[in-house]
Amino acid sequence: MKKRAALFLLLIASFSVAGTGAAEQPVFGPQRYEVANRYGLDNRFAETVHAAEGLYVVQVLNGALPAERTDLIELSINGESLLKEGTYDYRFLACFVKLRRENTLELVLKDFMPAAFKRPPLIPKNVTITIVPAAYKFTKGALGLHAVDGLKDYAGTILKIRSAESAALALSAASLQNDVAVRTAAVQKLAERKDLSAQDFFVYQMSDYADKPEVRGEAARGLGMLGNKAVVPILMAGVQDPEELVRNGSVRALALYPEEDTRVPLAMMLERMDPIRKTAVVRAIVNGGWRPVSTLIELAGASDPSVANMGVALLIGSSDPRVVEFLLKAVEAPGPREIRLLIPALGATKDRRANAALSTMALDPAKRTGLEAELGMALADLGDPASAGLIKAMIKDDMPSPVLARLLYAYKKLTGQEYQLPQKQQELKKN
Image (cartoon, helix red, strand yellow):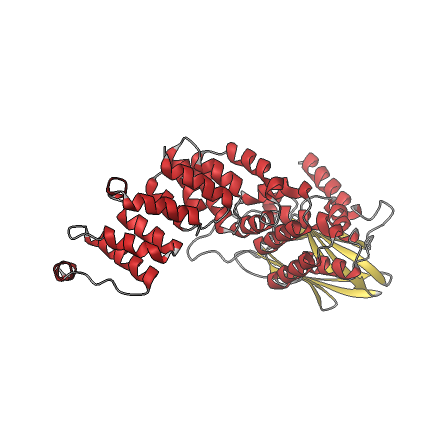
């Protein structure tokens, strides 16, 4: 027990001087406040703090031990809100504030209200507050930290930003005093400035797992807008982040790079994944608007049918010449790839060579058998008016209704006119 108490005091003392230099003495604290009233009840504390006028940091240790983190915290000084009532997923909080000679500190702590008839075990909850002179001249803001000495690193990413306007946006994005929408907008504006000196700040924000995913995702996009190849591995890690908004931001960022900068890192990342995870990640990449063509072609050329077909499906919609070349060869020798995927992929390219290849297949009864619907739709997508005769020739009396319906749709899409079925087929269609 004595060892635990000694460790706690050492931790508090370390946080009290972190980033300020050992010479800076606290003007208040460390003072510990316990959550005594439980199950959603308020625990209110008021203190008078005497100090010389100037800029200070109110340091909040959120729980002597990680498990003792308080559910809800609200903090103000002289009526100025430093922390709105909320949950803060950080071990430490650093709030910058200007103090007068005499100041009133107000703190409110409480548990979450438990569900009806459910009373969880009462784990101790507490907050420790220390106030020290500020070593970093931020006039306002509240920064969330994971480590005792984290303020030095976090503040450093903002202080190295050369432009005053960019630095102000960074502080607005970082400060937990602002709503998520305000913080996200600040990151977006900072990204649009393409300030290279903000790179470390974007890396810090994106990598902070406790921060809001909206902020982290926009920070990832900001990294991409800077265009530094050195951060591509960080963005690749973001593609695998548990938060969808972070994944999307990372994908959007990577889409801004030339493919030669991302091809090898992406291939290495996918190589380490099992097929299920690989499929999910690649789909997320394409859905996010990034089409790394070389990598998708490599996947489409895989010997594993599931991987190959996924690659082909993800190539649909691309008109890149490399895609056309690959699909033209694949449709002649499908291998493990599904021909029903290759045909629409070729149609979506809008390439004349694709039109010639699919027309040849449509003219050959042996090759087109069972593929009439796919060929008709692909020819309609390619848009050559001469293909109307091919679609018309594939319409037969005895074909299944779903296939007939797709061919009729393809004919109308290509010509703008309804295909006039013979009387017998009209009766069959009605039935």
